[in-house]
Length: 325
Ligand code: BTN
Picture 1 (cartoon, rainbow, N blue to C red):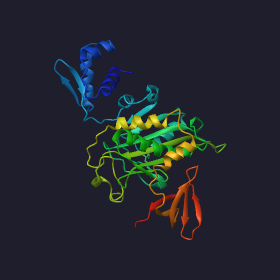
Picture 2: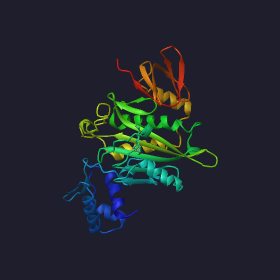
Picture 3: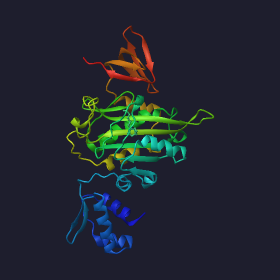
């Protein structure tokens, strides 16, 4: 790793604290002049690093630039950072992850962007991904490395990881709308798109591309017209109290956890986050819709609903919306 990256990691690990130039220079066996040049380069990249007389350098809390070093500072195990790739702008992190999966990128590769120009949503929709205010992250996961019997369980697990990470570092209690939209204050703050790379010969799922988009500090009025009434952010006033690096690290820790829960535990935790059980909903399947009541989820995460004639149906895919009162 080059000096600048090591210095950034050190500053990120010690946010708001002052580290002396002498300490950094001794640690890296470099001159204080080289330290100063690295600090100057980091400032040019947008980092606000204060130089405090006779004390040293301090990365201030106002900085929210996504970097592998910044994420590493919060990860529980440094090896989780081995395959993190950060882009300031990209068309879609899922598209990039898929391309890298085809090139046999390892399990646990993480692609993150500050801005997506063609963020993809479910059902061929687009996902609004402006610069500076969101977290757009895709994982390459090998299905044989996941603890689940059914590889599609990763979708529910991702929703759960997002909720738990937000609760841990922001103190909010987000909820899940089946299958995996994450809501806060009745607005969607996160969408998840899982795609499979299948082996052409056998038809088996080999790699899973798990894409997560979180609106961190996008202001409500800045969302496009078509989603403005439904989309929300963790900090809709545009003033985040956490960094995206920290949120990314918590989610990476959870998704790449070698001790991920098995399905019974996963769906118990997942169910406790669902906010539509017992409610009247509209089921959307392809071009058709029907009214129903959400009853429960089964042990595989399928949604059990009762339609208006009293018939019980088990939904493994599709979309629902809450019927307005
Ligand atoms: C949805 O709500 O329909 C799913 C949205 C998924 C968006 C994420 S952002 C990171 C990853 N890259 C993409 O292009 N899409 C997913």
